Image 1 (cartoon, rainbow, N blue to C red):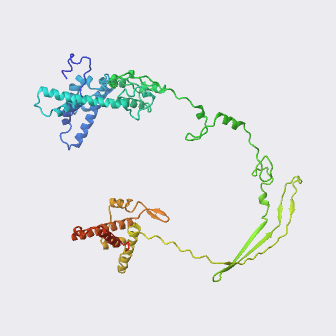
Image 2 (cartoon, rainbow, N blue to C red; image 1 turned 30 degrees about the vertical axis):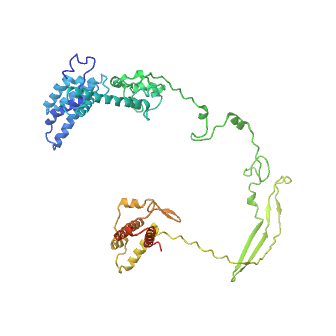
Image 3 (cartoon, rainbow, N blue to C red; image 1 turned 90 degrees about the vertical axis):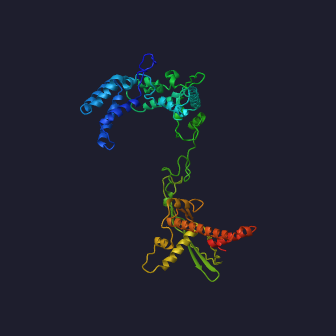
Length: 522
């Protein structure tokens, strides 16, 4: 601090202190006054409150807020912790408050760098390449040169990537002239300021422009309202990417108001085209032919119109013919006689007509005579030959439905052996047969694989989910099959068959025996 305070050392740059080192110094000096043991919960809570007030003093945005918080801090802790308060005031605030308190620090362009983390990081990187403290000056210079060259290459690579790409979430005419010329970090800082306009924001204090060299939300608002882009002259050179050439100022044209789309009656998602001008004119000027009634034949109305005199004619007319059919079937040994009796009855009907001759609306009554006709037909009808029912396809032995059916049959057989009064439950059966009482969730999911049972059971009526019993029976069968196959392989390997056999016949014989053992038949 003494070296940097000299007027000959960076006279044009403001000197700031590392806030991380200051906080560590305050912690090491003041924390023992509150608690000396990790198990002291009450003392730890008091220290947390004290440390929080210290950070509030450091984060004061104006001098008035700083003085107000400092006085409150003195009144609260001076009686009991006089040494700690005196250390903070005399050692740090009175001498160096202009170098780390936000009210004074925010008067300079620091780009949000309050600590020496960047210098500490590059220092650690150089020491990691040194490997030893016994290296001479020339070797140290070569190592430092190599580290800095690698850092420079990495920086150039990152800049090239940021020139060629743009964050997806940062778009719009506001960034049209600065994309590819500004770092991604600067673009995100500007977008954060733009998002502040979406909610309530305080009055402009100028902190963002002073400390970061970027336009704040209050400066972006008129540009957004006028659809104007940002210019590189409004941004500090610290955020610019080093690249050849100069940016071209391209202002995006304003969108034209589509009057046709505004007056359209179609929904926005419709794919139907708008009618052309001549089509709209033809639709307005064309005359449709007048409607014609399908009942009375009059032009000018339809059959459903109230003007039509025959609109309710179907309610007055009675049916002209009523059909009565009697079927008598006699079934002898090989044939049958069918007698059909059909009675045609013509009843009296009243019909109203509105003919041109009767303009006064007088009803005309007509009467007809009923005629009954009976037809009897006798024929020899052979009974239909019985249609054989299609046999249901037999299930494979390894089909989950067949496996579950065998499981139920074995369980019913065991139920029959249980003495009267004994428990006949599935759990008792599994316990008696030495089967697992339950399976893990992973095993139950495994058997639902398409290579095993499948995700759903297929039936004639559709598909359904497998029951737990069906899954358990399949897992039991799979376990038994694995044990049987391993036993067969062990028996075959004990006989040492390979040196004595030639050809493929013994393999087919083994496969046939395996199918028979599974229950698939001979």
